[in-house]
Length: 496
Image 1 (cartoon, helix red, strand yellow):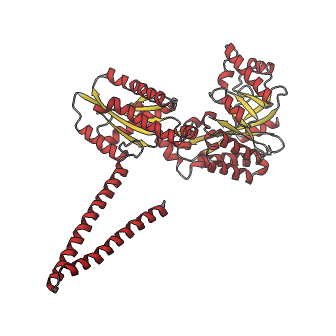
Image 2 (image 1 turned 30 degrees about the horizontal axis):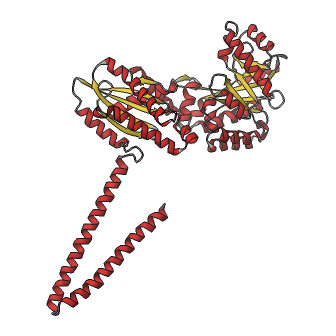
């Protein structure tokens, strides 16, 4: 790119130099041919020089004006959609807010395309651009008379619509946008879904900054509930967002790991009732926030890029505690550690795992990584390669909460895993629901047919255990055997 820019600039300069040289050469000859006396020649040379200055100044003006316009366009307009970028959108939004009539409401919809990176991977970046352009044209065609649109990020849009301050109209607006986007998806034959956060001016904010913040909070809430959801901003969401920000602030502090500790839940053979392994579970007890559940802080840690450091701490701490307790390698054959499937999409994070287990080679041979959120794997071939490279170090892999994700079966077919964990939501209901019984038995049969292990989690009584034994499940964990415990209690439990 730099070479092309240099060549273009050099060509332009060379052309200018040639034209300038030819002008000087031929204009001098013309003056000397047309005029004889020295005074007239000198005067014409002066006129000629000023003419050249005026012409080149005009050309320079035209070039600079065009360059400035192009630069401003690049800074303010997105080249793919021709929509205002974030900064320009906020300026235009402030102008609309300042002129908002008292009997009107401005509805700001913060729109996020779900799994846009996966869409680019599957259909190509040109298809991704077509989605962006179709969303733009579809919404603009429907709302343009009363709306402002902007592209706020690679997969995010802002849509500000001024409408009558009528609650029924406001409540129906998100569904109307969903319908328009469904039409857009069908028109280009590329499936995509969106999530939306909705804020209302002037109730939720009187300026662009506060209104965008409110809509962003609502969007995060919508995405937490799944795909193709929308959420209106509320005071409750603001409190949730503040709590999230508090967690982010604490996660970034250098003393974070001082407040972490590990607990261990034994996994037992159903037939022999002996301990065959443990699952390592991370706990965070903060001096001000108190106990922070993993399902609260782990997704946030993923969002801010902290998971490689947390994963390293969990692995090294478990290795240290279990070794010092004398439980590995002789007493425990398998140590299970949770890992997000998102970490298997990113090469740098896989390299982080490889580096850790290369440092602890013996631990790697008894360690099993439990993959959570298998639907987050958007590039199966790449993840398969990454998993295989880790298996070469001796690691085993398990799919956690199997049966709860709609892509679990395809992941099982494509990923080289060694174990399926049956989700506790099925175990809870096997005494009362025949559907849960069928699902559990099917998962066990599936594992047996694939030649891999099956583990049931959340086992709480003998009836559940008896059913699992009858259908051929190999291992189980749950309060029926033992709750998660500290290292000293685990030591006593295993050796008892």
